[in-house]
Image 1 (spheres, rainbow, N blue to C red):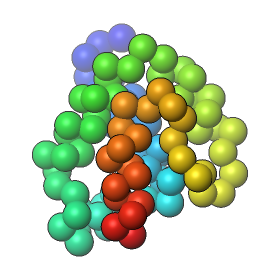
Image 2: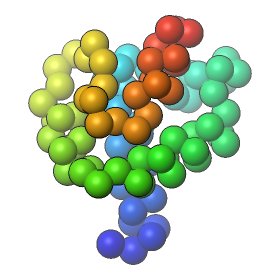
Image 3: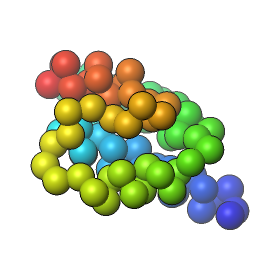
Image 4: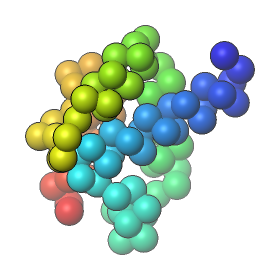
Amino acid sequence: MTPHKTIRRHAGLVDEMASAQGIDLEEQILRGHFSISDLEDAVLRCTGCAAPEACEHWLAAQEGVAAATPDYCRNAALFAELARQG
C-alpha cells in the first residue's frame, strides 16, 4: 500500500473509532479540546498498528456507541480522554 493510501486508511479508522465512541472529532477541535496536530499524531499512531483489519472488523460490528475501544487500539487513552470531556 502506498504511504498516501496508508495515511488515508488510518485517518478513516481514527475517525470511525472516534465515532464509535460517540466522539465528534471536528466538534472537539472547534471546542479546543483537540487540535489538528493531535489528529495527525493519532493517525500516525494508528499507522503503527499491526492489525488494521481487526479494527475494520470491530468497527463494522458496532451498533450504537461502544463502551470502549478494543484493547489493541493505540489511541484508546486519547479516545477515553475525549469522551470524558464530552
